[in-house]
Amino acid sequence: MARRRMIYEGKAKILYEGPEPDTLIQYFKDDATAFNAEKHAVIEGKGVLNNRMSEFFMTGLSQIGVPNHFIRRLNMREQLVRMVEIIPLEVVVRNVAAGSMAKRLGMNEGTELPRPIIEFYLKDDALGDPMVTEEHIIAFNWASQQDIDDMIALALRVNDYMSGLMYGVGIKLVDFKIEVGRVFEGDFQRLIVADEISPDSCRLWDIQSGRKLDKDVFRHELGDLSEAYTEVARRLGVLPRNGATTKGPKLVQ
Ligand SMILES: Nc1ncnc2c1ncn2[C@@H]1O[C@H](COP(=O)(O)OP(=O)(O)OP(=O)(O)O)[C@@H](O)[C@H]1O
Ligand SMILES: [Mg+2]
Image 1: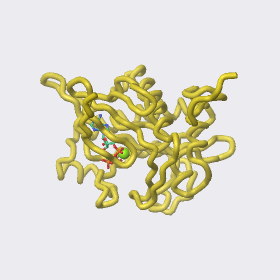
Image 2: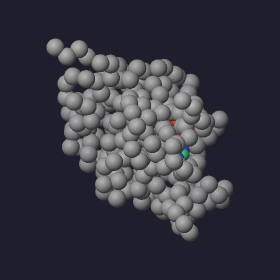
Image 3: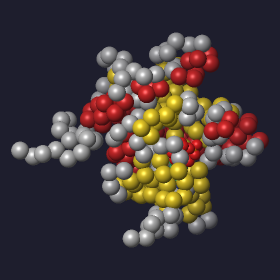
Image 4: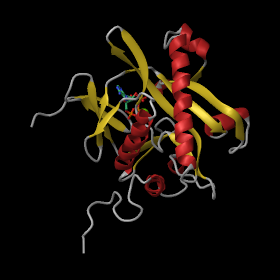
């Protein structure tokens, strides 16, 4: 079989050329990185869980009319997506103060925000993904004012969808980031949600216990990351409540 052409290898995923024009295959790796890749580990099964969860969230978003790149899952670690022109920004939505915002503004982690707050970060690993304002985005041509308005609208819809979904299974959506890409359709172009939505890109806290069920478990060594992600997947019904997870085939007795 001919080898597929690799297009890009990132920290968490690999992109391959897709089988049809304007498609890509996203391969989810088990690698976890934090603090701008200063901390790195391989967490067995993480890629499988994130592939499944991103499929689940993107499919739900499509069903409520939030456009995104997901086409179909191909296997345990790969999904077919629509190729987009990635806007070089991370769009972050925060419902509760945590992480860099709590630190920067001297707020206690866990402080409820008066309304969802959107932030933009430039995707530039060498600079440590600095926060940027709308002024920077427009002046430096990373996106237009119309793009910014569209990104905000998309991010808020994802926030409402994800918050409700998580609330239903006893989890608070504290914050998350999305990436957005441009697609061209004839004379028109529009922005759609791309990359992934998974516990790697969200902060998720168990409502009852406050237990963290996201990548902070890895960042701050709070326990078993794959166990936390499996818990999220189980609650959402993405994995069976008991039995097969990611550890490989089980003997049927
Ligand atoms: N539909 C898509 N079309 C094109 N590129 C995409 C699409 N979805 C995601 N990407 C890009 O694919 C890459 C996924 O790899 P990964 O998440 O491992 O990257 P990363 O290490 O986080 O690096 P980066 O700083 O580029 O995001 C990212 O660069 C992301 O922007
Ligand atoms: Mg990434």
